[in-house]
Length: 101
Image (tube, rainbow, N blue to C red):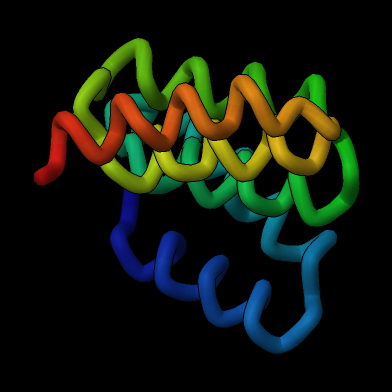
C-alpha cells in the first residue's frame, strides 16, 4: 500500500474527517495487512467511536503480527479503561512498563 494513504488517514483523523479516515484505513489494511500501524490507527478510530469490541479486535490483530508493538499494547490498556476495566488496564500497563523500562 502507498505510505501516503496512511499519512492521509492520519491527517483526516486530525481534521475530524473520521469516516473518510476509516474507509481509507480499511483500504490500507486490505492492501498491506502487514502494516501494524494501520491496524493500530484503525483501532484508535474505533475506540474514539466507542466501538470497544471492534477496537479490541483490531488491536489484537495488530498484536498478532507485532506482539511487542508499544503503541498497540498501550492502546489495549486505553481500551480497557474506556470499558471501565481499570484492573485489566493497570495490569497491561505494568507489563508494558516491564517490557519498555
